[in-house]
Length: 482
Image (tube, rainbow, N blue to C red; front, side):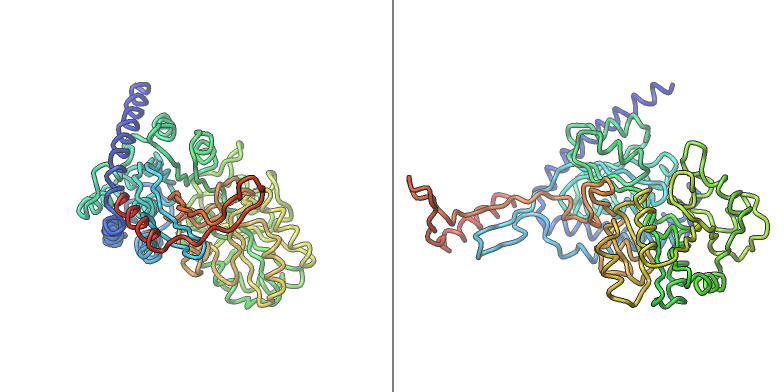
């Protein structure tokens, strides 16, 4: 029976990829106006169904909470739409008259979209919008533990897209998301790009598929509270970030780093605002519960509240009002579980003698896990901010903001996105907050402006291109791609 299931799922992957390829061909004829109409319809549908999808996700996965998942869906539908609405992505997207160059946006074709269980509906809204904006079709691969809510999200956005003129097959999903089906989808000839958001194994599989891929690594960002920080605000930002959807945003802080001279002040403020510092016995007991012997996180803690985790781990003395559990840590590495990414409201607390040791400790934490992802500093000292910004190995270096919300572009001017590239240092092909411009190729039309003098071995400037001829060529290109 299992073999039959794999065979059926593989066939479904092949069928969906072929349908998406046909749909991508039709999308190419819609032009910017037609694509924009579809993206707007998806955004409106995402907003209208934001709470419904949040409730489905929480019920199915047990991760996070309805209020914050609703905000995630609204962010994907609303904030992302605002950012991409006026972008030019197909046809002539830029002209450079002085250089005699034109940029033509070219869709990549069919995208395979991997969906994580921590963001199973907002990722669908977001990826559908940026792919369709870029003129490409997308086939989603849901996480098996969140398939129902993901398929419902796909149903909602695809129906809305069709009412706006989107061809059938342009937005679809595997209904039986087996590993065999995901592998078949990623390696199918029709798939031109893989947009992977998920665990390390899935991202590695995407990069090993032989196809171009945009994948993201683990987040494990430290938060440095500098001596010039507004400590009360820094702690408030920290707690707001770490408790948002119960810590399931990969950009959220995973540790706090302070100087010895700041320890008492920061700790006192954290306790005042609802953090619970664990003693050594409690910390050891929780550490044993956090990760499995093979090093993977215990799924039972993912997206749960601090009191829920304390109860599951059998910790005594943790109040029901606790917002975040905090454990003292000294080193980073595989034998120090608090130094790793924890997708729940748990923080490591590092204390270092001075700023230079904090810089080295921050680098050590990130090199262990989280390189290329996110770091946050709370400080008013511009020189310190710039110094750390030049040396911390991340793609998002955030200042005086909640990392979970700043990293995705909600509280910062970073491009709003739910797929956060980690760059080469993090094993990713991009360091961007991924948007439509990452999902197109650019054809460059270039006029000759220099000539090689026959037999002389040197170059001479050509006469400037005739403006009338340029205009005629532009008009011909536009007619051909419209």
